[in-house]
Image 1 (tube, helix red, strand yellow):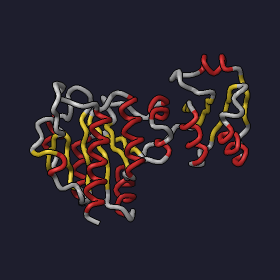
Image 2: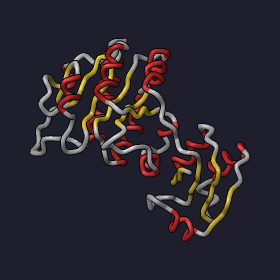
Image 3: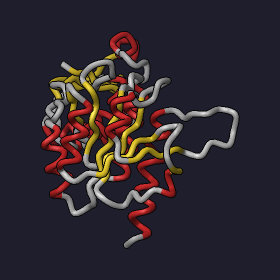
Image 4: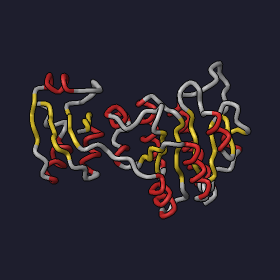
Length: 244
């Protein structure tokens, strides 16, 4: 079973219709958890009341906010499903590719930003990268319920598949060919963000149609992966809005 912790992740799981096997709330939290109580009542999910110390012991993230739940793990989807969802959408396709992101806080933040901009999914490699964990779900503030994630064995092949499906692949890199706001990001887009420290792998970079860089005016020459992803996604949103 997958453990979900915190008000937002549990609330969004309930709103998305997730089948919770167990829902435990801290005694004395009735007022602050009213929305969760109402959602659980609507779906017929029984509630257990426990002392907060019990939740403290069970918590994996140390941020349960008086709410713990268990469910079957959020499943990954096939890359073909992301492509189909993107092409069936009324919005221009947008998929985010993460190359070797290992920090669950970064993945959770990327999912939250991806949900906010209406991205059609996120692609992650199966090896040497973080997957969907309790911490990822907590940091995503419930976005894990709405943003499908494809976990692929070969990231280079996944990029080739997206190109064949009509996606323009743009990677964020410190030595990018142009500034991100000078590139045309209005068409069907797959944005590639490298992992912490090393950035994109050489082969991944070679597979990109274009690499762009974010302007850096301070002494630090790189940004957190989740921050870079959010900036890139919102640049896509800005450009597309300006062409309407």
